[in-house]
Amino acid sequence: MPKESTKSGVVRRRPPCRNFGGDPRSQELAGRIVERAQRISALHREQLSDIAAFDQTESWRGDGAVSMIAWVTAQCGVSTSTARQWVRSAINLESLPCLAEGLASGELSLDLVEPLAEVAAPSSDAALREASTNWTVRQARELAAWHRAREEAAAEATAAARDFEHRTLRFNDTRRSIWVAFTKDDYAVAKSSLVLRVAAEQRKREEDGGAAPASDRVGYLPYDQRLYDELMGLFQMWSGRATGAAVRPRVVVHAPLELLVGCANDAVAEIAGVGPVHAEVVRRLACDANVDLAVEDPEGTILNQGRARRDPTPVQRVEIDRRDKGCRFSGCSYTEFTNVHHVVHWVDGGLTNLDNLVTLCGRHHRAVHELGWTVSGDANGVLTFTGPHGRSMHSAPSPTWRPSSVVGTARPGGKPGRNEPMRR
Image 1 (tube, one colour):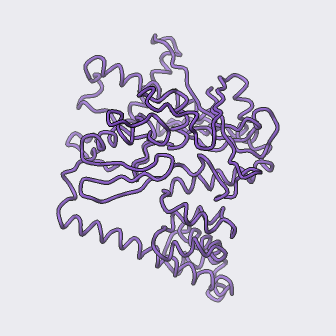
Image 2: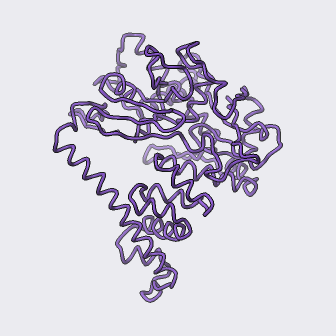
Image 3: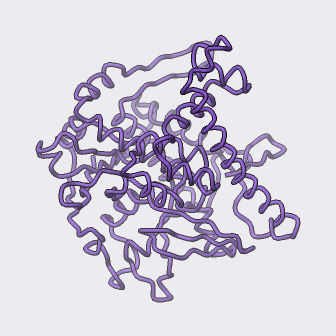
């Protein structure tokens, strides 16, 4: 989200507002920006096609380069990471005509196509091209990470052990900083602990009438500083200099039942907010965790509540969190302090079903209630967010929520595997 600087130097986030972008000049600029981005994608496709042809004959050797990446870096004046993206994508897209066509038409950007091309195959090319139209770049990268984890599950039998061996915490006295390399599960515990404490502090402030702490001189404390204060509070509590009940961290792990019982080592488990983890990490976590089995049909109707209740159940919230992975508003990357919103409002007869419940951050929840934005569609599929000036954006669930044969991860019989939530 955009930010603004105040006179005091404190950074505030600007909330959504209907009073901007409705004038003809802004409408014209918005249209041109989107149209130009589509032309840039088309130019990228032409560039990648030429790169692939140039690389195939190793013509870069004639200019003294040691690789095509080095040649692109020198001749095009781009960074090594950009050159690597171009060359890798150029090679991958040669066997993926549908994704290549999506890039050439401007419907898909290079940042979106790159991770998809890494895991796509000629057999899944067309299906991925169609499915990814409403995906974000973050979702494409999540899918690529999930897909790689599935393919490399057997080869990474010692990955969890290496991850644990490489755990590190270093102090830098000069910069007064700490550098930590967590294992995935320890990272999830640390993050959950701090986020829960920040949320509890926010609730306490609201119950006390919104009074700001003494350290918050301007009435707003940035999120990163609030996390810092809570971390110091944990240190002080552990040292006996402060009192109060400790907040037990809650880490959600989604794992197929057959993985937990040791019947499958190639299945993929995922720590919510962290990503895929190895089977042995999940089994270790399950030893001292509360395990909830979520058995449902492919459409999730067993979880649906209809008009029986307004608020989603705890099990529904776990499934919605796995599906949305944060705020579903187009372009929003906010994952903490979110609300579950009824697409069709409860007072208008909306149902408390998965397809009518969507995750929104506080700002965008207010936007669809009070600032003129509307949301329509199926939360399990594609949602359309329409702004007060008529421009529409689309949002799709995480592609790793219920992976299908589209990405080549279907189980025998064509039924996608069901992940069971496990809370530590």
